[in-house]
Image 1: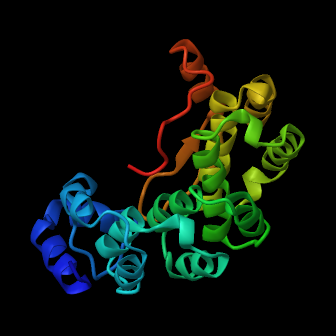
Image 2: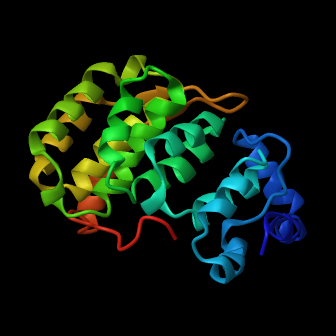
Image 3: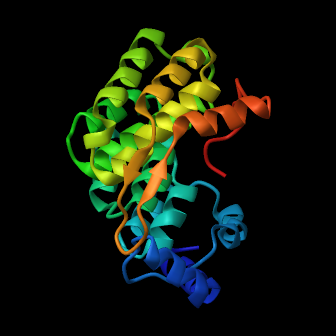
Length: 235
């Protein structure tokens, strides 16, 4: 299948209701409104195809950009590739659920994520923190520096309330993910989450949202999920 074939199939799968949901979350035209599950049969036919993924991502069509993440080949993507992708990620569903997810399957994930976290740019920061969430939820604890993650928890504690809105969400999720998926710092994450307390997140055209990592960590504890690791990062 070439890019034109994929675009035709995606357009045929689009639903107006799904499109409205995507737009309400920040997607901009062009967007078809394809449910992610509906993309799987096409992805199975294509498997991994980086050149095609690049073509689709460059269209600026939200559904095509999301699908690009599904068929991308992280093993051959460079830091420059990810910089280009994050430049094109104009809202969090792309930065956190396409770019960060794809980056999390590479050997350069922490290096690139660290740069994004330090960038001061809302969606880059959000993608950086999100990438760590995907990494921690999938990779063995032995692949991480406990000292580094502890310092990152402290950075979240000290800066989350003044961070850009979308970054707040990813930082909050980082504390939760460390508390649930990185056993060596479980207790530290619980302590930090309590110290942070509720995080106010203002959303365009939506009610103010309050994030509470401590409550969500406790729910995971109650379900016996501490130490949870997912088998795959991407679906």
